[in-house]
Image 1 (spheres, rainbow, N blue to C red):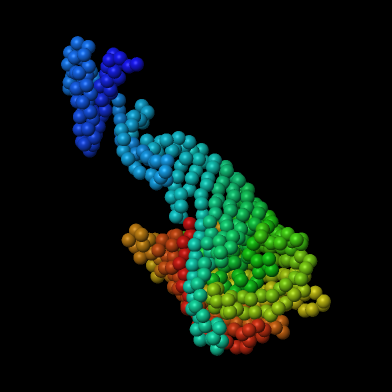
Image 2: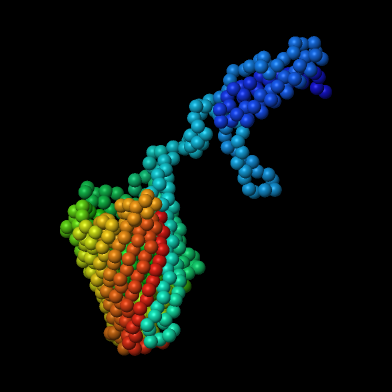
Length: 498
């Protein structure tokens, strides 16, 4: 049972604490301070009543004993009820640890969050996290590329269609431990399918004036100029026919190992791989050996000359060995608009090779590619030979340099001088391309060409809008669309890369 003495002690404790609360309130909390003073007066009135009972002297809030002031700041606290998942921000006076007494709330939070010394920088649309000693690095990465296209002018009504699609819907991570070990993983959800893309671990180091890395996992091909860049790298909405047709049968990816060597004016790589990570495991893998090298004999701040060579040899796994090809020629998302080889089975292996030459001077760039692929057939049949070439160019009206990556010998994301989000015009690029594909070494093989004019508007180094107008021609010898056919496709897309 509580006695008047106990009640007095409790009230006295409140009285001692209350003035400290009142005198630490900042000017912008006048209402809260007034409330505290009112509560102090009520407590003083209760004390007076207690004093009368015990015979003590009356006490007022103004003359209440004071304790040593304790520094307080308003800290946002989240209040939640058991039946409501939503959080409500409220402010209540809370005492900070002595070491943080002179800091603002945001500084206090930041100090608590960074107690491990994590360093954060914002680059390329996402934060990059580094440990205080630089040992660990981690960042997210992703890609969203959506297209819409409309085809007209074909003599086949089924080809004159309008379609939409996601070129890429990727999310991934990359990181490093120390100066040597690194890793990367990406998954693509385009076409409403989950598909593992890049997935590897690696080791890198320097050798005098050169450097190297060795990666192991599911890796993207290092093959041709546009074929070596990601889906967000080409200056057109689809890679050229050299990249899409002169390719191993397994496609753009393969599980294996890839050592790369870099020097100041070029690089070289060798890849030994099996099938992609998502391939069937009911039969043995195919085997592919692929190599590429590029050299920049001219390399200045505003000019580059690019020379490149590449080749691959592929031994197909035992089985039907299908070599049927249907290559995009006038827009990725019109499935009827392809150059076809006709049905072809009985393949035992493929060998391909190609060359690249181009470069840039100031905002103007030019690139030419050519390649050939020999698919070996069983039963003493002659090889299926594919031939492709492409010539493309572009010019940045806003003065940016072409987004050429001299380390890898391919295009990347441009560095926008005056981003739209900073009040500038962004980067505006005009592009043009002619490409040709020939499968006519087969009796059922077709051929075709496409001429493309386009414009790219890079709002910043992350977001871009693209528009292409394509004049195409096909001459297929098999399938639903046989004979000469021509038409136009207009296609546009928006891409976000981070």
